Length: 294
Image 1: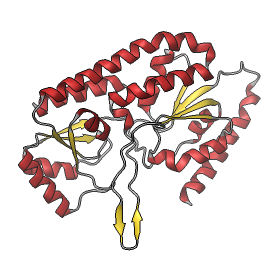
Image 2: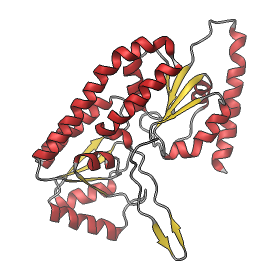
Image 3: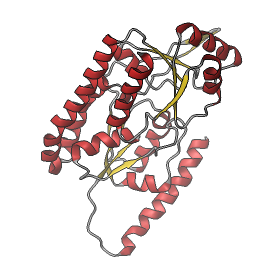
Image 4: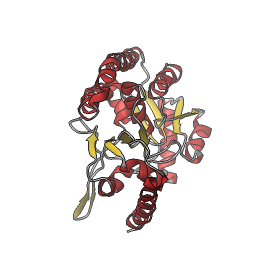
């Protein structure tokens, strides 16, 4: 109900904004753009199109994809988008995608999770009913997964933006090879390291861990801060496994993770899975693995 009310207010503001645009004269018709859910998807689109197509990001840097509500200006930009590229299964997408389609019925949607081997949480049994485990949405944090979705993104861009086909075709091999290089780097690292366990506050590296043989130990449980007992168990586990690093996303509170580092001597290291520079951030995470898991 709250989201519906938010959408009604934001939608009204956006429609009023759009209605006033023609009154400013008769400007040249603007080329249809692309809307994406998060900054890393903008990175891939702009790498393929050389920034020739306007890209609108719905969840800006520093905000949570689980709880964010779009602004009127973002919905205005969405109204002129031809394509929406979504991760699939983000909290923001689950809550808002049907309403975004209402605003732009002609909008084409590319769900990058389609056809992937997704990671599903455990089902929780409560008496006579079951709470189904959710899908982990962090597919973009694994180079192996990106190698699967890049061809799909390439074809969709060519299909919907034929004027930019030459640019996309020209840029695709270089981008693919750079992602492939990162994939090989993580594969080689996995074979070289004896230590495979790391801790992280919010489990954003689930696909990275799965695809390259690492073990991710999250502090957060079902999207919530750990209970005192859970925290005690995590501290004991960290000491037993000699955990050297706890990763924490820049948008999360450091209190619980800080308690674990105090009791274990592990280093608390910030990472940013929502960074625009996907390649730079994954390279940095690779180097952090070398530093702390060696």
